[in-house]
Every structure is written in C-alpha cells, then in structure tokens.
Length: 310
Image 1 (spheres, rainbow, N blue to C red):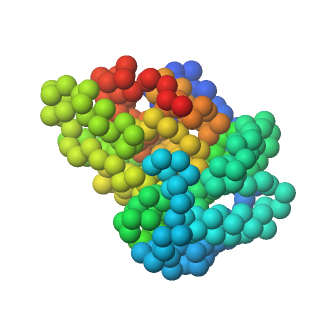
Image 2: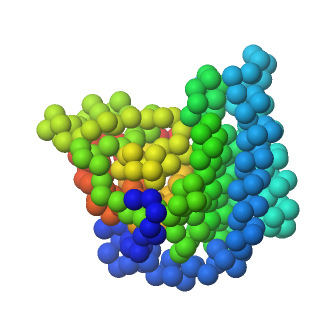
C-alpha cells in the first residue's frame, strides 16, 4: 500500500531472536545523524541531475565504441562511467570524507569492497546504471541506485527509475517513500507475482513442481533490480529472488523492503547484509506474508539454487 507508513519493522521469520529488530533500533538515529533531510534531498537532486546529464542523452544514442564487454555477458558503456564519476564527486561534497564504492571503480579495484565491511565506518555504494544491458539495447528498464552504509548496515537508499522519473527513498527507522508517498506492508497479489534474477530464472521454473507452479502468477525478470524493487513498492509484484547479491544492486532495495514492513533474507535464512558473500542469495518482499511465501517457494527448489557460483 502506498500512502501510509508501515508500523511492522519485522526482519523475517528466520530471525526468531529478533536480532534484526534490536540492531535496527540501535541504528535508528544514525541515518538522521549522518544525513539530515536537506542532505537527503541533495542526494536525490544529484541523482536526477546525473540521469539528465549522463544517461538520457545517451539512451538509444550509443555508438559501437561507446559499449564494451567487461566479461562475456557483462557490458559497460561510457554512460556508466560518466554517471559514476558525477555521482562520486557530488556525494563526496554532501558527506566529505565518506568514501564512494562504485560498481565500475570496484571493477578496477576489488579491494574497495572492503570499505563496506568496516565496523563503525560509513561509505556510499553506487550503481550509476543498473540495467546496463537494457540501456545498451535500447530497452527502457534502467535505474540509478545509491545507498549509504554505516557499520556495515544500509541506513539510507535511493532508487531512481530513469525513463519513468520515479524516485524511491528510504532511511532506516523512518520508512520508505515512492514518488513522495509513504509505502507500507501490503497484502500479496493473488496469485503470487514476483521477480527471479535472470541467472536463475530458468532453473527456478524448471525445478518447481506443476502443483507449486499453478499457485503462482507471473514470474519474470526485468534484468534491472532497481526497477524490480520499485514494482514491488508500487504493489505490482510481491517478492524477488536473486542468487548473486552485488551490493550496488541490492543494498538500497533490501533496506526499502524492510522499511515497507517486509524483509530481506539470505537463501540460508540469515538477515541480508551489504557485506555478505556475493553468492549468499537474497529473498525480498515488502510484506511479512509475501516474504514467508517466497521462502517456502525457495525451499521447493533449494538444492539447485544453493549451489555456490563464482
């Protein structure tokens, strides 16, 4: 539901001791201490400025030389690099001294990931162009994602659906908004609708029994985690499953699911962390009920989906 802030700050049925809730209460003032309302608005403005300056002018306007492969099936464009540079400079001005961990910077120096796991320290995590393959192909599913981490925990996040101009923002303990309206836990769609990461989508569908598959509605992938999180917040889907959990793709979205009244869990049942191993898996939903049902679905196909992948 959009329009009312959720009161249930549940972290998931497999956190029975309530550790997630305890930590969330301890960290509740941190988001405000690090980033006041004015600074949060400056981050949103920076993201919109970056989209207007570096992404939209290049959308469906890339030359062959503007796109290159980082590895088979993984491309980067000049738009990714320009956007990350603008965001890094701007975020460093908003919070001087707080380092920026950008997707393309990590590609050149993987040790930057260590900044996320520093106890008591802060960093920004940036995906300057989530859905690069879509962008390069001229498909209008791409986003900018920014997350502020403190003490290894996401305390603030922004996801901007660039083609549609939709912004979602969250601060820990203060809820999540989509287009300026508060989002709270909602009744899952029936039959259950969700997203499964494209790397496991075929395997997931193949392993589901006919009986379980008949209980589900549309299971799809947009190949853009940011767009998928916004679809869940808008009530058009109920859950998402991903095997690979690169923090620039998921830290902000996981925070938003928690703040909406749902949760974000590893495949093994532990609470999601931006500092977790990249192949630990992620289940998210914006309501407690949908998260439990997504866990049950994962249990039905658990063995093949839990095989570690490099």
